Image (tube, rainbow, N blue to C red; front, side, top):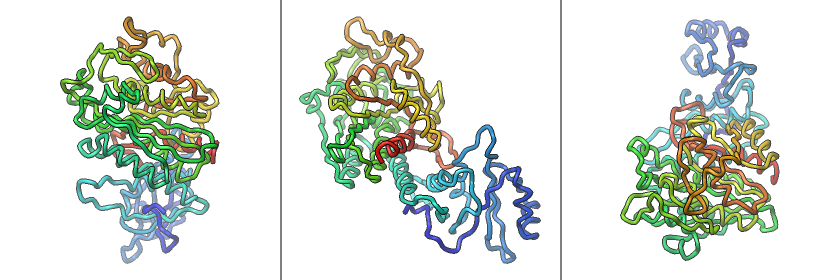
Length: 458
């Protein structure tokens, strides 16, 4: 069971209050507590909390404001604020929030703190799981999110391609998966020229991480995660402001590992394969250059329009390998384009697929899991923007329009045989803390995709 949770014991009740239920909630309190709440100005505003003491000053109850259920928008993760607000103790929900399962998950997610480099006080507020909540499933989901956050929050000096490979191997070993890597110049020998080109300028060798798990007779689900452990932009150098959180550029890989953790822990009936091209996009005398042309694993030649569009290059070789097996479902996650952030912001990643049934399922589980995703089109008329005069493709079309769409169209060129393909352009970062989502690395899309896979293959 996750450390945020406690076994049933003496516990302090948390009463959820909205503006419309405020009067009845206060009326149900003992007179002294009612007077204390009114004197304290508790109005049931979303996120507002109040601890009610007994005559000796001991905490006996907590009031916590949430949005009205029929509001235009209510955040089911609002209770994720509680671990940061409450003193040490064991608590329980005295009444049901709008979604008890998501509120419970949010409580666990809100207890996260990154403490690798300085001593931190862990949250000592613990929650008794509400009746009917699956402790194992909630714990599994929270543990996966913590894994993704820890990997993304770790700076690049301690999370290079080798360290990312080590994290993947530790996960593979935990669940008995078969693990291998292809490192450095062996990438050229094994026909992964784009991964090698992007990562060759770093002192830390590029590599392709590969592990498989599950019964070979089960449906094939392959996950591909962008593992750019730091992105300078290459010779098309980013400004210093653009590099500040580029430790998160391996967020696709981190979230793929989180998703794999959930799949293997739940023993879903799939043959899982995980592929992570792990590189640093660095600057050196042997860095790849604008207008260089490289072959790809698929045989398609690629002209480099911009060295800062490197994520799609490493994913292209990995997707081509994944596609050779003709998987039933091929999913790739990557922190790929600023255009996606301009269009939808940091909290709402776009996803792409030509499978309408899959798209409908993604939208259902994105809503049910409070893991927002928004479908964008693989718009065929823009496909010609990828044309090169001297190669089969250009990795970064001229102009500033539809950057996330053209990236998805580029990747689509490397997926031919998979029965279904899903591409998600995640951000992998929470820039401003929200309930259940501390500032820093974030788990995005993994929970929604996991629930989709659970429904199909559970």
